[in-house]
Image (cartoon, rainbow, N blue to C red; front, side):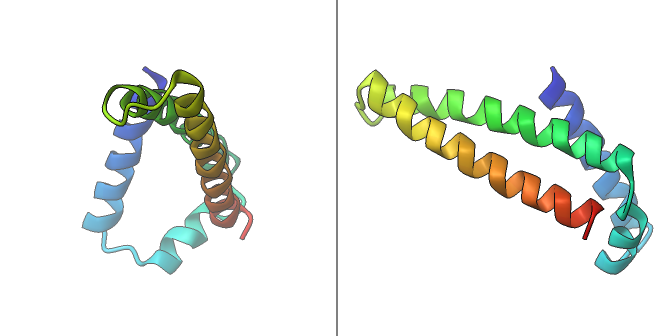
Length: 96
């Protein structure tokens, strides 16, 4: 449920920004130093980093024929990469 709410808020934010004609520079100017944006997108990144690897592990087992251990190991590695990349983006957006 957390991820679903985050996706909806994120999409609404994108629609607002696009319809308002905001540039990337204008968006970054609005998010710099914003604790609220940082907190929201941190929750979004964590939810995505938890959710996506669970599905990927099942796909690895069922479709790719990987053992449970191999599928879980690969999905954990993917989760770590996703979390690091996501938090790097949050940092860049809020702190710069």
